[in-house]
Structure formats: C-alpha cells, structure tokens
Amino acid sequence: MDGVNGVELAVFIALFGFVSVLGFLAARWRRAETLASLDQWGLGGRRFGPWISWFLIGGDLYTAYTFVAVPALLFGAGAIGFFAVPYTIIVYPLVFLAALRLWSVSHRHGYVTPADFVRGRHGSRTLALAIALTGIVATMPYIALQLVGIQAVLEVIGIKGHWPLIIAFAILAAYTYQSGLRAPALIAFVKDGLIYVVVLVAVIYIPIKLHGFDDIFAAADKKFAASPAPGDGTLLSSAQYLGFSTLALGSALALFVYPHSVTALLASRSRDTIKRTLTALPAYSLLLGLLALLGYMAIAAGIKPITAGSGKPDVNTVVPLLFDKMFSDWFSGVAFAAIAIGALVPAAIMSIAASNLFTRNVYREYLRPDATPAEEARVSKLTSLVVKGGAVLVIIAIDPQFSIDLQLIGGVIVLQTLPAIVLGLYTRWFHRWALLAGWAAGLVAGALMLYDTPNPMTGKQHFGGAQYALSKFGFDSKVTIYTGVIALTLNLVVAVAGTLVLRAARAPAGADTTRPDDYHVEAGDAGVGPLPVSAGQQAPA
Amino acid sequence: MHDEPPNADRGGGAVAPERASTRVWYLLLVVPMIGTLIPPIYNTKDPTLIGIPFFYWYLLLWVPVTVVCMVFISRFTRGDR
Image 1: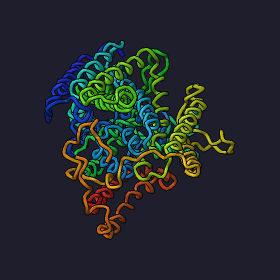
Image 2: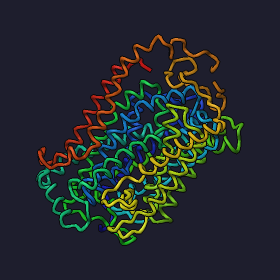
Image 3: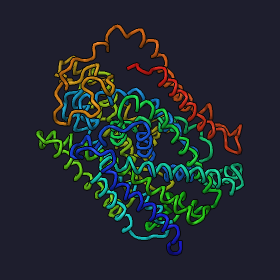
Image 4: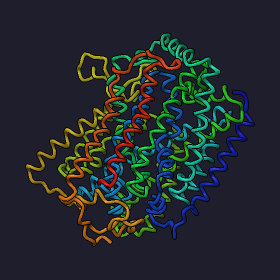
C-alpha cells in the first residue's frame, strides 16, 4: 500500500462522523425523564419494539469481527469456516423458548444481567459472582477484537499507527457514556443498512467480475490442493464432521449466554417482540453466509493479505483488500465504513453488558448493597469507560493475537455459565454448589485443553485453535471436537453428580425468589408494567 | 407492585388442554438442527447451483426454511405461555 487513499478516507470519515453525531443525539431518542438508572441507561428503557430489536440484536450478534474473520477463515482453511452458517441458523430455534422465559422472569424481578437471575433463582451470590466474572472476562477480549476489525480496514486505507483507533474508541466511549444502550440501538440502523447494501453489491458484482462461481471455487480448490495443511478444502473431510457440528452447536449455545446477547434481549418491550425478532433474525445469517464466500472470491482475485508489523500476514485484511481491489474508491469507502461502524455497535453493547455485570453483581452485591438506581447508573457509565480503555490498551500494548487467543478462551468459558442460567430457567433440581463445581470443572478443563492445542500451520505451541483432538484422550482417530462442548459435557456431569451427592447429604439448597408463573408473564400483566420497578426495590415475590 | 396475586387463569388446570395441543408446534424448533448439524448428508459438490457446491447452497437454503419453521411456531403458539 502506497500512501493513503484520499477518496476512501473521506467517505469513511464522513460516515463515521455521521454515526458519531447519531450516537450523541440518541440520548434524546424516546426520551425518558432521566437516564440515571440501569433500566434506562443500560437497557434503553426496556421498551424496544420488534423493528428496533431486530436491528439492535442483529447489529449486536453479527460483529465486525465476524464479518472480517469468517471470510478470512474460508480464505485460509476452507469449508470448516462455513460452520458460521449452521451456527447462526440453529441459535434462534435453540434460544427461542429460553429467551422468552428469561425475559419474563427478568421483567417481573427487575433483573438486568444473567447473573441477577442466577442470584434470584439459586439463592447464591457466590454462584452469581462466578457467572458475572465469567461474563466480564469473556466479553473483554470480544470488545478488543472489534478493534481488530477497524484496524484491518485502516491498514487497507493506508493509515498507519494507533492514533485513529484511539480516536474512534474515544468517540465511542463518549457517546456510550452519555446515551447508554440507546446509542448502539440508533446506530444499528445505519450499520445494518450499510452492511446489507455492501454485501448484496459484493456478492453480485464481484462474482461477475471473477467470471462466476465455477471459476471462484476452482481457484479455491487449486489453492487448497497445493497447500500442505491437512483438512483444508472446499468440502469437509470426514474427520472434520464432528468438529464442524460441535463448533456450530457450541457456538450457538455460547452466543445466548454471552452478556451482550442477554442485554439486547432484555431491552425488548415484550415476549411478543422477542418472538417476532427471533423469527426474523436468520435473515442476517443469509447475509453472513454470502459474505463468507468472499473468502473464496479473495482467493480467485489473487488477494495477498497485508503483512503487519509482526512480520506475519494479517489474514483479516483479505476482505477489505478485496473491496479495495474490486470496488471504486468511493464505494470501498462505504464498505470500510460499514465494517468499522459494524464494530461500534457490538463494542458499545458489550461494554454496557460488562459494566452492568460489574455494577449489579460485584459493586452492589459486595460493596454497596444500598446503592440507589442513580448510583448504579453512574458506576456502570464509569465502568464502561474503563472497559473500553482496557480493550484499546490490550490491542495496542499487546499483540492483537493475544485478544484472538483470549476470545477463543472466552467462547469456551462463557459456555460454562450455561447450566446455571439456561437449565436454571427450567428447573430448580440442580444444587447451587454443584453448579458452581461444574462451572469450575468446565473452566479449568476448557483452559487446559486450549493450552494443549498446538497449531502446526502457524507454528504455535498453545492456543492453536478450539478443536481438541480425540487422539489426546487415547483414541486412535483424527477426529476433533469443539473444546467448549467437551468442557460443557464435563461441567454437566459434575453438576448432576454433585447435585445427587449434595441432595443426599441434605445440603441447604438456597432460597428461590422466583415463582413458576414468573417465567410466563407478558408485558401488561400484573407486576410487569411497561417500565419495571426500579432496580433495588425488587422484593422477593 | 409485586403484591398482586398472580393471574388466576395462569398455570391452572383450565388451560392445560390448549397447551398440549399447541406444544406440538415446538417440535418444529428441532427441524433446523437436524437439517444442518449432520454434515454427511450434505457434504458433496454436486449438484451445484450457479457454480456453488451443494454444501454451501444447501446450508444457505436452511435460512429461509428456519424462518418458515419459526413463523409457524410463533403463529400457532400465540397467547400460549
């Protein structure tokens, strides 16, 4: 890359500036008397209808990193990268019922975070703390990864150095601080609109320029045939079947328990809103699937990833490079802005979710039990600044590869909160200490397995991927399984065994402050007004 | 606000028959998982669609199918809690 592309940069800055203004104005959107409570700042007033929810959740779950990394995975490894499509298809039927129950019980009791629910359901503040900290630890590197998406775009435009990243995140931090969840909700309209336009243009225009999909797949086949890596190709090898399925299933299960997904769900107005939103959300999966194919188009177009400062090629630059090569300058600018703005929406929601977890389940639970709603909002706002500052520091001070490794771990460990949250939505059978033991077992096992996974292609000894080889357990097989699913299985086994033991020993089960009908209430029912009672006043029902 | 008794008509025996009949629709939630999580049934190149191998367009086809499944569930379980 020689110098900066002026047209691309101008379009990019114009669009980026536009959404920044939107972000600040969002504080006045559907104005509440005051933003000084978590229901307002952290959940946008809990009043979003189907349209806003659709944009918000779509903008939240399909992150810039996804849009950059999934095609990059197909570019590098082939068919296995397409796991993103079954993953983002099955997640909706999978969470459909659980999401409705979580919404109802959370509105009845004023829960803001998944850990709030765990606290109320299982009567254990230690378990709630474990769930909250896991959520925060898993979310932090995910926020940092959004920066990787922006960085890839900036590299292609030709901007060197870290200052643009710092400015972009400072602006993001400022308007999130001011407007809370309303900011990403409003920006999501622009983000998703831009992404839809860019992807539709890309998947129609680029294949025509590359003489059709026959040539594109032929080029990909040729590349994978020449590469020494086992298991790459435009179809799966039979040894990859189980890894592909478990990765899709495990990722789908993890997505629902990520704090930022729960935050976006709880911001919905009603159960009916969630039903409609989840029904329409797979539309984004179609988009993601088409976008994934850009990885092969990049192969056919002869794209070579930019070699970053570390001397290794940065595969995340292939999609921006493809746009740069195929599109006119001004449309490349639009496409780059779409990716960068796509990073802002999830980064904002994730930082809000992590802040709410800290405020509700650490600060109020352990430090200031009598915190007022206004104080909660203040703490959350300040925490969101710290969280984003931390993310920038991690990317700049430490190798971005570090946050990619951390995010890999994040996905595996957040999955370990699933039994306490999702099974808790259905049954009180599990004992709180057994759930805690299962969580710990899954966490340790998951981390150890990830540490024990080398990647021969990149020469990495540890954290080489989230596929664990069955041969490590002594099986004579090339089959691999998604590490998170193995850890979750262990987690469940420990939770069940522990519950049996603790029940036999008559260990105290903890008070359940929820009632069976709490899981079915709809907006407008008794105790579930359009706005819930403010946090802190929730009485045990 | 939390003092009100729970809605009397909920969770009681009166709505049970209606629930049982609508619950069958929830089985549709399993269909997309069966369709997409068993790679051996779709891991082939042919038939291709405008040059795209079966593996890819088959999985993409499950997006609209899933939407249809979920529309049915939403429609036929409306009011069911």
